[in-house]
Length: 115
Image 1 (cartoon, helix red, strand yellow):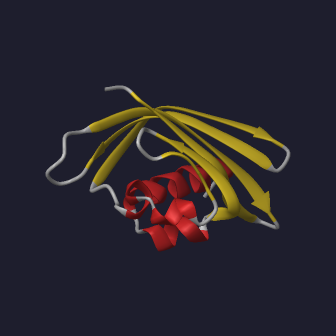
Image 2 (cartoon, one colour; image 1 turned 180 degrees about the vertical axis):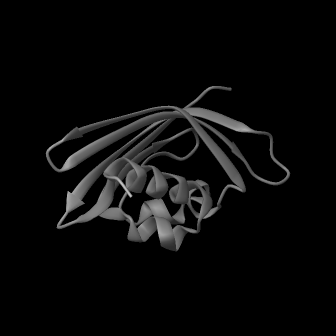
Image 3 (cartoon, rainbow, N blue to C red; image 1 turned 90 degrees about the vertical axis):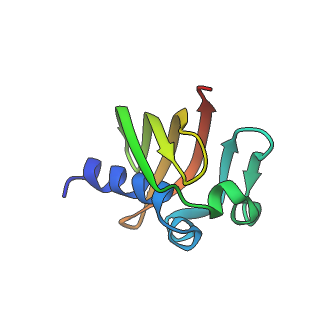
């Protein structure tokens, strides 16, 4: 599996697996910028937010871009995500990862809804 594949796999699991999985792949003081009302979240506040704790049933990531600079990687993409009993959610997203001793950890995540 390439570095690109590893990062895209982590990003998809961020959307589809539980908060515990996301927490293990996220740096301790990561910063997320989510749509209102969640807003800007950091540290333990991330895991109390329902948008992080509640998983999506399916996601499709298109318009994928990835950029590496030393031990930092930035992913940018369009997401279409679905939960039961909710309309499709579409957003432009970025996630920044740090390679910490061979393990990729999410430092930041941002979503701009397209609704």
